Amino acid sequence: MKAVNPKEQNKILLYGDMEPRNYRSQILIKYLQDSGYAVLRLDPRAKQSKYKQQMKYLPKIKFILANTFCWIELLIKAATVDIIYMPPLNTFFIRSAIRVSTFFNKKLIVEMHTLLYDTHVRDRKKIKDGCREAQQMIEKDILVITKSDYIIYASDRELNYWEKLLNIKVDTQKIFKSPLFNATPLISTRNFMQDGGLKICWWGTFIPLHGLDNILAALKILQKRDLQFTCNLFGIDNDLFAKYSEKIRLERLEANVFLRKDLSFADDSLPNYLVNNCDLALGIFGNTDKAYNAIPNKLIEALSMRIPTLTMNSPALTEFFNPETDLWVCEPSPEAIAESILEIANGAAYPVDWEQTRQKVLNTFSMTQYQEAVSKVLARVKNDYISGNYVGETLLS
Image 1 (cartoon, helix red, strand yellow):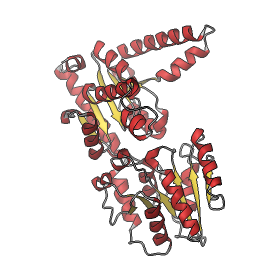
Image 2 (tube, helix red, strand yellow):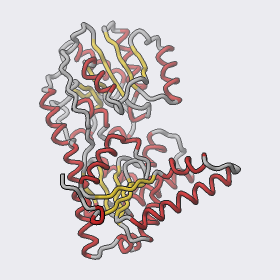
Image 3 (cartoon, one colour):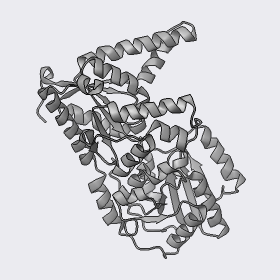
């Protein structure tokens, strides 16, 4: 690619934590740089933590100074860039993003994957609905959707769900659709149940959306039905890891079910394991509104690797798939999950052309689609600046 003269570069500030979607973030950074942008970054939490570690003051003074230094850095960087860009899962920082983008007349682009309120209050139930903190989350969610200049979102179903939940209407002129994508190029060539038994795999965190309790209850049913199977559950090392380890022990599932934290997508160790050892991938089975209205990353990851997959039937699937032919689905109850797995193991499940599904996933949930969405947003921003449609005018109107 032709080298870009630094003096001709536009500057963009990536504001927020980028680790939750690491491979997506790296792809974004590379694409921006290849497109001629000078990329600056600021992760408020990481910066505040770094500042605190460098100080020898009392905790309260540390907090005040670290927050002040972080604000100063944000102001300096925001003043020198053309665009402020918030990656996914950073709604917590929306107020400061709006303030600096308004003050410096800079465009604000936000990638939206989830709502704070929906995640922490309704789905995970970490915060009591109706309390002040829950209300603050609603306010921030509304700010992201109504006051950012442009939004990149993953699915129409989820966007409509957010509108109803927050009682707002999204400006269709400011939204750009970009479905999730998986950057793993690996493909399973494994013969189904080639080792004699059924090798089941699941990966993710332990949030209610994923429905791990329903999965474990289904596996207990399979154990009682004498199905020859193993199930590896790949999670992360947090407080719930110990909880589910104990639950597996109490349910006497240790001979069939293994909770692991040694492999991940970050270093390709998990996808490499999956394509060689997984007969059946499990998606999500949560009994929550969020589960019914979202397409999970793990579903796209599994299908793009051509791994046969069972997930909960939901209205969200129909936006991109035909659930009756593209994959296996069932209701999110232990009994339904168990019966579906038994049908699959016995060869009685309806036929699915997994290569055809894989091609559909690669065409729809692709890095190219994501880059095209980013390109369209950046082109719109450039046109706004040329026409004089500055962010300060839109945010204060």
